[in-house]
Length: 378
Image (cartoon, rainbow, N blue to C red; front, side):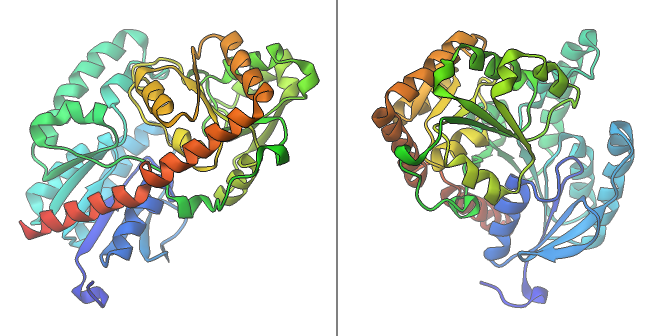
C-alpha cells in the first residue's frame, strides 16, 4: 500500500444525481478504494467540503430543478473534476457521459463509466417524460450511450443483464451486494422473539408495489395483529394520502427515512422483508439492494416472481415468490410464514448464509480494486 497523499494514485468519483452518502458510491466503492491506498475524492451534491472515512468530499450546490442539474451542474462537476488532475475518473450518471468523454480527450487519466441501471429501459417508465416520447428517447439514448462508452477505458455494471448491452466493451460486473459491516447486524433474532411485522425499506412508489403491499394487509387474518413497517420516502409525497385512504393502511407504521443502523436493527425483529416490484422493463433483470440486505438480516423474503429473483430465492431456499400484482398471493405468503415459524426461521438462516458465502460486497470490492490495478498498469 502507498503511504502519504503525494505518492498515492488520485481517484475522483463524480455524481450529480446521487446523494452524498449513496450506498454503492460512497460506502462501498469510495471507501473500498481509500482502504486500498488510493487518494479518493467524491464530487457530489453536498452542504460543504469535508473528509469522511478517508474520502474527500468536494461539494456541488443543489440545483433548483432537473433541467438546471442536467444543463448546469454537470459542467460545474466537469470543471471541478478537471482541477483535481486525477489518475482515474469514475462517474456514475448517464447524464455525465459527455463529461466523461471530455475528461478522456483532455487528460491522460483513465475514465470509468459505472452503470447502475438499464437506462433505456428505465426511460420507458419515467412519469415525467411524455408517453409518446418515451420509446424514441429510449432508442436514441441506447445508441448514444454505447457510442460514448466506446471512448472510455472501462465500463462497470451492476448486473449481468446490463452487461449484455455492453458485451463488445468487455464490461466488469460489480454487483451491489451488501457490506455486512455496514448493516451492523451480528446475529439474526430467533423467530420466537420477533413480532408479527413485515418490513419494507427504500423508496415507496407505485412501481415498487406500494398499493399491493397495503392491499394485501386487508386479506391477512386480523387475529394475527400483523403490521407493516415502511421505512423510506413516498415518491411522490402525495402517494401517502392515497395509501392512507385504504383500509389496510391502518396496519401500516410509517417510520420515514431512518439512519442505517436504526433501520436494520428494527428490521431484524420482523418476520419477512418485502420486495414486490412491478414487472417494469427495468425491474425484471435488476438485483435490488434490499433483497440481499433482507437476506443478510436473516429475514425470509416475499418477492416478485421474476425468473432471475425466483432462481436466487429458490437456490438459497430463503423465501417465497409471488405475482406482485396480486395482493391475494402476497397475503397467502404472509400467512404461510406466520403459520410455519420453523420453516420461516430456516429461510431466514438460509438467506443469511447465502450472503455470507456468496452475495457480499467483500468479493465485489476485490473486483473493483483489481480493475483499478489493471487500468493503471496499462
